[in-house]
Amino acid sequence: MQRRGPLLVEGPVEVELEDGTTVYSDRFRVALCTCRRSRRYPWCDTSHRARSNGPSDDPPRTDG
Amino acid sequence: MAYDREAPQLPTARGPLSAAVGAHLRGSGPLPGPEAVTGAPAYGDDLQLALYQCYELHYRGFAGVRPALEWDPALLGFRAALEERFLAALRAGTAVHESVEDAVGALLVEPVDGAGVSHFLRDEGELWQLREYAAQRSLYHLKEADPHAWVLPRLWGRAKAAMAAVEFDEYGGGRADRVHARLFADLMTDLGLDTAYGRHLDAASAECLATVNMMSLFGLHRALRGALVGHFAAVEITSSPGSRRLAQAMRRTAAGPAAEHFYDEHVEADAVHEQIVRHEVIDGLLEQEPHLAADVVFGIDATGHLEDRFGDRLLADWRAGRSSLRRPLPEPSREASGISDI
Image (cartoon, rainbow over all chains, first blue to last red; front, side, top):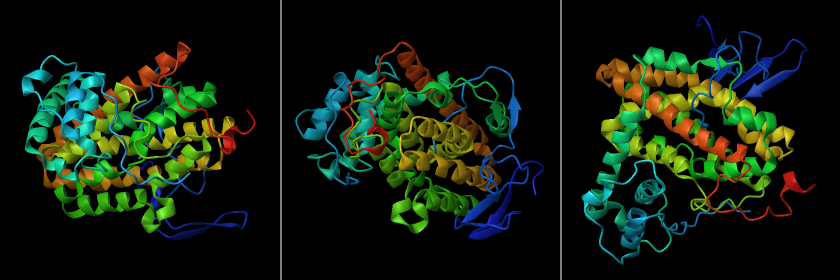
């Protein structure tokens, strides 16, 4: 596992959450959140990234 | 609204270069020599539209234009002159990082108080601005992933396998209703926009055309495969947080479920793609072809350069209270879900 970042697993995956519900993804590869900060938990949404305070524009931003 | 497979109409010319390409495509006029390109502003409307017309022949072409013109030697020669000018401006105008690690690292830090287009749309974007944004972005998103597919034959081993896997995801993982271009057409329907391929070309700014032309330029030239990989990495790395802000914008304005879904899907998909592109595509390419590192950096930073120009133009227009489009959008159709309460 990387020092910072999600756990990558082969899809499809079914994940059982702590409340007993299960969620499913059939993506070819799935990024599982390991920092608990994701707003789409258990899937990674890149919330683990470092944040800077300096004023800045968006980094490049199309959608892939 | 159906996902239109018809070839689009040729656009309205924006100057002598785009007029000459249009005339040549209609079969009614010789192309000027390469010297005609010399004084033209590289990022200007005329040159960018001329180049866009040349490239579109490799995607879906134009209504009434012979498909064989895709490989017309005279047109390819003229295109080369346009490309040379565009690429020279890109190389001169792009501030490049020292290394791939530095360039990627810079993208992995999220500014707390970002001031880009997606921040603006999240915080204060109005529906008309979301419609303009989607209309311009449709030039890419209705052929999403297509410019990047050109690179596949130019990669080997794990870089190729990983790039193909990400592209497969972009193309819906084998399901037509999940192809990202299809999801974007659904978003456009929510926003009351015409989803026909190429319909918004005349409305799009030169800054928007340049972002799409860069993808085609990098994709169509094997010599620029490193830049294509760098560009693709920049897109995938930055997409997830940007898409979250755009999904929030769609929710706040009640744009509609498909409009939200397009960006929600990209939050999740691109968090995966980022990891694969960084660790498999870039690392795999540079393992085999380490001399391409400078091109990867150029592709990353040129993407930032052109996206900044496009974002600055959008924000300048909107903050001045004016449209960012060259021609107004038709009023949204009544049945569009997000705007029924207007």
